[in-house]
Length: 278
Image (cartoon, rainbow, N blue to C red; front, side, top):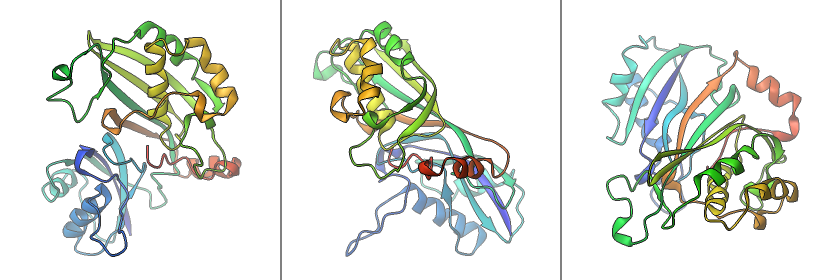
């Protein structure tokens, strides 16, 4: 058997997230995993399981999702992007492909991930809401204090218990994660982007970080409130969960084969770093 890895991008607007969903007594929901498996299966001419590194939620986009599949057939990785993309709907693309070790696990071997959250702000009336980029940009009708948001973002960097920044009653045994970098960038007078990278993310963690930083930008929180929010572990102390359309998985980085599983065994309480339903 051979294992192939793919770097894929998708517009999440019309998808119910990455993971396959087959509700009882109804048709399967349209998911990225579902259409990827159908396309790969058509190419390799046998059933396949396509494993994705991140279970992005409904409406969330990706520019750098990593997936893999096993096949007994040998393929030239250079032809796989075009061969698979030609079998995919127009809102998914395979950007690159490579053959990897059969033990490669796109979830367990990931050592860091990067997300971007894009916001349009300083738009006070409904007719000034994002239009042509509305599916990839969230909207805040007030002007945001970007400098205050930058200061607040710096307090999120480091290893912390991010219980206050995840959906209540999320299933993880541990809510400790390390944020390697968190920056707020003014892309234009009315567009900002929040860039967050870390070793893994909790359910809705990036969207809650974005909502908290927006609240700082609106002067509802002070930048120096962030350490107390983290220490409290209280979801009620942090900002709202921002809508999914502003979020995009930008990249995933890997260490040596198996390194992710070794790390997880050393920190059993964390069980998995896959960011389900971001």
